[in-house]
Image (tube, rainbow, N blue to C red; front, top):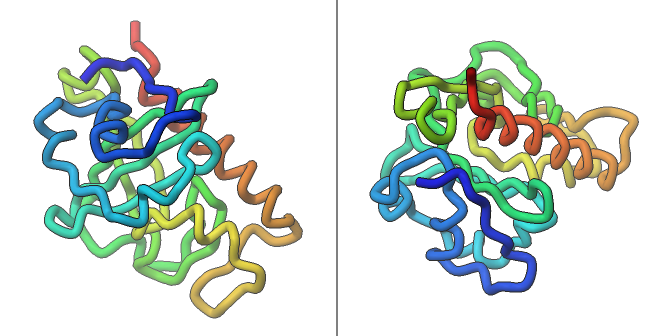
Length: 173
């Protein structure tokens, strides 16, 4: 798909609108994407939205607010059951139990992606970072970034997800 983004600020969040944001996959891949119903209730213009595809568990999808628009990213989880030790998600900075953080790779947009150039990050295995930054108190399996308010954690998540999206969109010389 093209590396253009779509402004969803004033539009209804439909499956087609979500598919049109996908910047690093083919139209066919975007068409096969399964969008859970709860995603339609989210506001990707202001929050990071992520989910795994239940029919293709190695697949993940991320909607990231970036420069007044929304960028959709297709992700692929590395094989295995996630990091085998307690780990911190690079996006939401939440400390998770063993197996709850996985390496995700995203093909770069455009020609670089067609040449199999990828960018990777460690993220919550369920891609529920937006929910994790809202946790008020640490649990034995989920410890949000300490000392920060929920709004500070949400802003940090948006900034780190936008930086990751920018790496996916960046052209390589």
